[in-house]
View 1: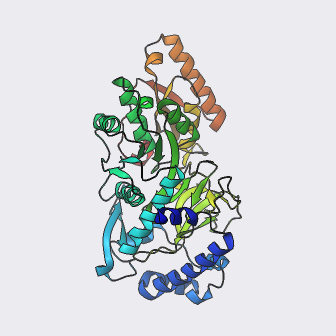
View 2: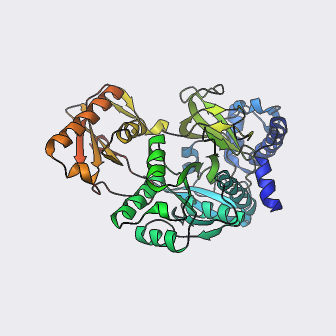
View 3: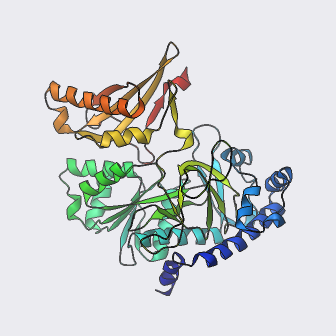
Length: 436
């Protein structure tokens, strides 16, 4: 219990003490990478900075960024800052093209990772008395083992199920008296659908809390999950390059995600200029790891768009809060000159009665003119209703989307179960223009 109390207190540390710790760890990290990683030594030299130039946390802005291309160029082990014999775990993110992005962990890094995930679970009131089902994928993906390590460190009974096998997931939830679950929000929606098909009432089980991440999701999706299952839905954020799940999470107040900034130092920058933006301004989220030893990253550009809020949260925690990530700068679609994010369409669809939380945006080009088709599943009751009801629903969706983006979209209503389900991240966009 002393370990649990210690973890809990870390979230409430006074700001000045936290910043002193950050500065100390940041200095150590900058010296580590400059001495041990040729990429960073060359990068710092080109920018005309040395680790000794860091006098305050504000000086971090003098140092150059790291991006995903740098990780790919360093494949597989070009960015590790420790001898290979100290590496005890290797993960990799699945890229759509080329080789994966490799992430290496020392034993210290795994300790940090399990600590931060434990703190996530504690925000959802999970304790040693809980039974937690891990339905993120295991393997090279960081989701499964990351969530597993945190739940195990907290003392929970952990069920390492992984993704897929939905009926078996439901069987375990019932027979094992599962109280907590970790998975993507889209996969949990799929679990809810399968439960409804077989007459399985999730609200009559012990399941009370879920930690959902690995893909952008909206407040409307959270509402759909909580209303349909009785599960309190927490947003967990992470990325494999920084550590995996457990970089931040929302608390009981649910007014932003607390970043564990004793380990991960966040910034918000202008995506175009790279200039640091003030607290409260939206921009691209950048992280510097300040306690990792295997593969520290300096000012890593995530492409996720968010804001930072340094006001003390209603829950009492002092850790900075980031806005939930609803979109990424590289997820933006440009259709006839209009900027559009899939999450905007999701918010519209889930606000309309009769639609299901499964959709796909299909972008095509005919004679140099872009066209947008929105395919959306409708509820079984609506789909089986008369044609005029479907036409009214189609017209409502079309009108609201046009109000949102100023463009007309083709609305295709499809029957339940038509759009392909994924046990991992949902595939929301099919951009046929890239195939031309």
